[in-house]
Image (cartoon, helix red, strand yellow):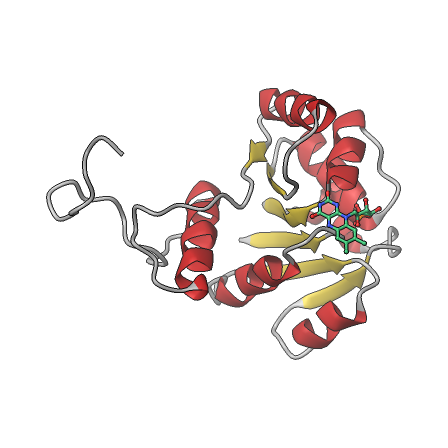
Length: 183
Ligand SMILES: Cc1cc2nc3c(=O)[nH]c(=O)nc-3n(C[C@H](O)[C@H](O)[C@H](O)COP(=O)(O)O)c2cc1C
């Protein structure tokens, strides 16, 4: 699978970095980052191709490149709004608009609390177009005992939706679970 992962200027870039680290070796990974040198440092030794957001002329910006999936983790409400309006003014928003026009998988992980009505409308609009709207939402039914486990739960849910096989979290099993059924 050829996958683009974009990291925008919202809180939670660690989740985007961890998502990239956990991708299986079978994935060809292209990463678009905003101007944060810190992210670049963390990623430059990984088996990924790194792009700056300003590199809008890159091959991944073209529909002919044949990207299978795009994940924007975290996705700022700014980038969400641009994508919802069809704005393609940087490599992240261009790659997202190409995914929509080519009918490819696009997953957005908007991170904000609370969401404004504008952000909610943008998410609904994109969801109706088939875009996967998957904020980093906490889940407790897998009984996480650390931040790492909680992050693996969220990333596992994203992988599931992208069709990437994984064993990153304990799946719900009503026979084995001691959590009350009415939770
Ligand atoms: C410290 C800091 C934290 C931020 N966290 C968020 C956030 O969690 N979610 C969000 O939507 N925007 C957040 N922003 C605002 C975005 O960074 C801002 O809207 C920026 O223009 C996004 O640009 P981009 O979409 O090109 O990455 C934050 C800004 C700062 C300075």
